[in-house]
Image 1 (cartoon, rainbow, N blue to C red):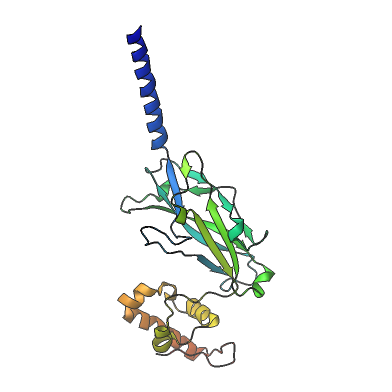
Image 2: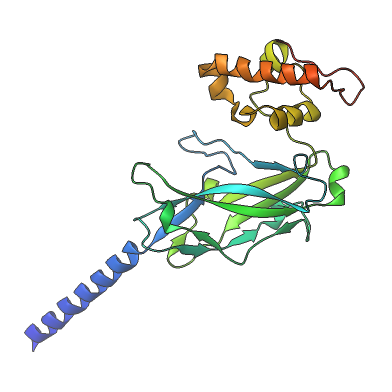
Length: 246
């Protein structure tokens, strides 16, 4: 009798172990690529927000979209996995109507890249035009959190949320430093940045890495903008001529 008991107990424990392995095998964690809060340990992750603006949109466009990169830990997906987002009210100044959330977003299995060290996908959050933007210099803030489920965790805390800031005018990019002012594009203004992006092919590729590693390419882009300004003179908001410093 005791032998039968131990056999049954062994079978039960084996079944539980197999069930645990199955559950673990199907478990994933999803998190945002950007940090919404500074990482406390090991201290290499710095907080960041996703900026989006109506400045580059046409006047008849009612919405713009913030692109958020999401990452996945766990085994390669065999099929798409749905997930949802909640608004974090304490970190949000946006009001109803200024954003539109889907009931579910999809992390696509087809995005898997065996050559990459990360499994990534991109979702889009709809931000809607608002008359309040005219008076809000700092823009409208929307903070979102991933909703965990039994088979889907929300990853490390510092990357479990995303912050979107919607502005009327574009925010000056970090690469537009005082050195860029003095030696390349001149004083920053939203209008100048918009014209640069709209009229110079490849201007959207200009970033810190290009400035450091491909200065000849940067000069080529800025000189193309200077040529465009020569043919199409522009004035800044204060009435002064728009110029570049190359």
